[in-house]
Amino acid sequence: MGDGLARRVPEVIDVWYDSGAMPFAQHGAPLRNAEQFSASYPAQFICEALDQTRGWFYSLMAVGTLVFGRSAYQNVVCVGLLVDESGRKMSKHLGNVLEPLPLMEAHGADALRWFFAASGSPWGARRVGHDVLAEIVRKVLLTYWNTASFLVLYANAGGWTVAGLGSAPAVDQRPLIDRWMLSELHAAVRDVTGSLEAFDTAAAGRRLAVLIDDLSNWYVRRSRRRFWDGPSSPDGAAAFATLYECVRSLTLLMAPITPFLTDYVWGVLRSSDGAPESVHLASWPVADSALIDPVLSAQMALTRRLVELGRSARSGASVRTRQPLSRALIGAAGFADLPDELAGQIAAELNVASLDVLGGSSDPGELVDYEVKPNFRSLGRRFGARTPAAAAAITAVPAADIAAAVLAGRTIAVPVPGPGEPEAAIGADDVIVTQTPRAGWAVATDAGETVAIDTTVTPELRREGLAREVIRLVQDTRKIDGLDVTDRISLRWLTDDRDLAAALTEHASLIAREVLAVDFQSSAWAPDPEAREHADHDLGLTFWLRRA
Image 1 (cartoon, rainbow, N blue to C red):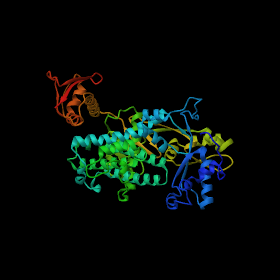
Image 2 (image 1 turned 180 degrees about the vertical axis):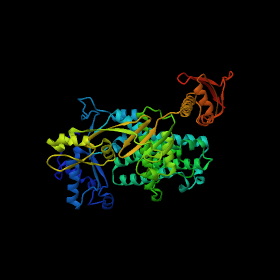
Image 3 (image 1 turned 90 degrees about the vertical axis):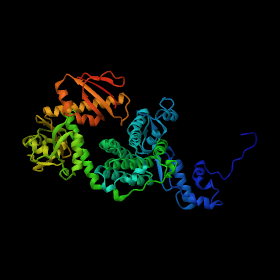
Image 4 (image 1 turned 30 degrees about the horizontal axis):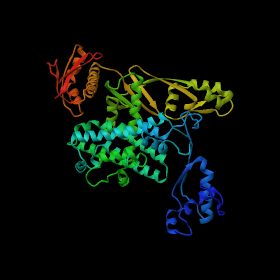
């Protein structure tokens, strides 16, 4: 301020009144610019931190109501304060302040935007740090990026372009996994649109994270072979069309939260058919309710739960996933009604030759032994002085009966002597159930659903397992040698292990098909500068490969 006399304007009431008058004072309204003011009043959405609640939110409401008879805003979010990863408020004297620019340089601006928009309720205290942002990059952004990269890689390798959408089978003619994925996509479009229209970015982020996981960790993984086959087959064409629609729509849905990454991916995906240059100029996707199939969604959810249970059973029995097994028995409501295609997904994921219903004709009887112990902490709260009587009553009931009830989410009536009710409903909190699978079986149970896997490894199954270990080894070697995913190879092998040699001979066609070998033989390679020698001492295998 320069020299001179300054006088206070008498009309100034209070600085918070000034902030409350901002919506109309900036236009000079209501004395002038009335049309411009009415077009922007009230605001659709305002947002400020917790410390501004009384000062700004209330002053806006009070002044707007006083002058115009209505609040100055329609929607408001009061955001919490930022704290460090240990929960302490950020402060310079504590030295725990994180500067935003170095954070963005380390993890990217989109990761920081996702954190603020989609990681938890905005009104709660937010723990921000390098570990939180690194997890967002790993679980969300990189998974999305890798899925888009997968599409581009195989589209370029197979010669697929957006023009191929017209030759893809109609949606109702595609495999169930395609119809499921498109159902989940359009349900996500509906849900994310509704959440953003309600200014709930956290709900939108959670729904997007689920869709990204569905697309990458189930659809792409279960459909990978179809992309290997290329777009020339109807099945491959359906896979490319489905994945393209999903990645394109997902890119549009993520754009408001992660504008930079999605705009780059959009530029890669954008065809030459007049699509906008930027994702932020493109139209928002519209959900097609005809493609949303709740029944198929529930069946696929059951399929995936059973797969997780089966993996848990195999892991508990220390049986490698690549080791084929003969059969699995399934006990779950709705399993018998699953389409063959989804049952096949379960068998393939669990690497078993066949599935049957637990309790069916192939059921060998009780697969586990149960031990049930009273949970005295829970019983003490319920029964007080009658706790010993309740524990004795539980012990007197056959363990299998109690286990069957509580594992299915039910209670079981147990007679408890003494004053009060003659019978007590015993549930999962009142007992501790231990399951011990019987020899030759791996069993996992959760919420009334059970998967039991026959872990007997016959010589034939062992040879097939060895063949799959070789496939894994050669695939890893292809990557190390810098081969493209579509490169065909010639492969020679030698081993002194009779079982391994038998496995390589018996399953030669399977190995050759999986590793794209057009020439697969047992012999040492004559000196060839292009053929690189590799050895695995654990398997006892030496092999040579080169591009065919």
